[in-house]
Length: 313
Image (cartoon, rainbow, N blue to C red; front, top):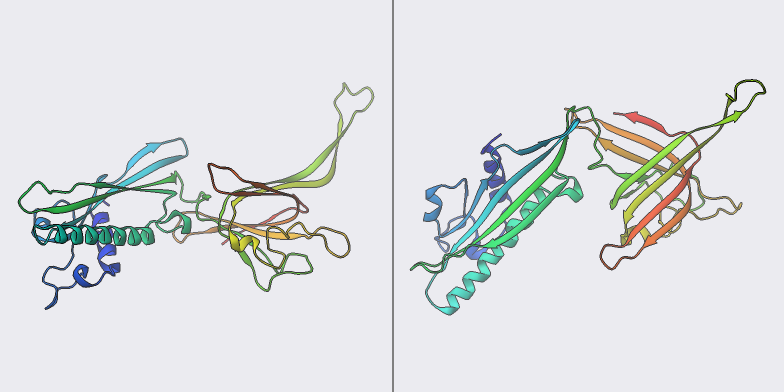
């Protein structure tokens, strides 16, 4: 894709730019020097007193290949330039505030284009790092702040393979069994790991004179559900069964709620296909982890009470 990706990001910044006053993007009778937007390191951007310049440092992508997937890294530099209006302390302080406003606006827009938490942009991780490149030793002082944006993702060798990124875990109201179910399905948006196992137990009985090779009989089904997520107020502040603190509640008959979760995963085909696993579970353990060096984490563990069903659509 090359430099067209820098053009695309530049267009996104210009289109979503929402600053007003001296930092507006459109020239008018009151604003002679609006913010201009450029891609690549072009000489012409130095003529603009207020500018946002986008460069893609990896023309295509930096790639590390594995057997079944590759790690792909895309790196951009986004530079905010603001020429100080006058050579005095008041003008300099005002210019510093304005270039910082430009930086905040750039970061706001970038997060709408590349945001792992919402699945926007298709990257598993993004890293934003600012540096100060001010040119204040010259006769004309220019405040220059540069954002290095690093995006990383895993790309399967086949676009049919489903990926964990951008999947969701949902409480299925209609299929769950409980006495205080919510009116509609509920999505847990802070889940970062789900593990499900299940199968039929095998009963082995030795038979006399059979060289210690046992006969095998199929026993009952058993399965395990494990889910790790970060604590979020809306997940624990409800009054109905989808509340994390109520998933393992007892019903009036003394039995545990039977909860049905829908876990999804997407592939990268065109059109994209979604794998959905329907998991019926009784929650038997609810663990909370309070760590001084991390976010508060919750872990749900449950018995899967019947075989999961799968759909691809």
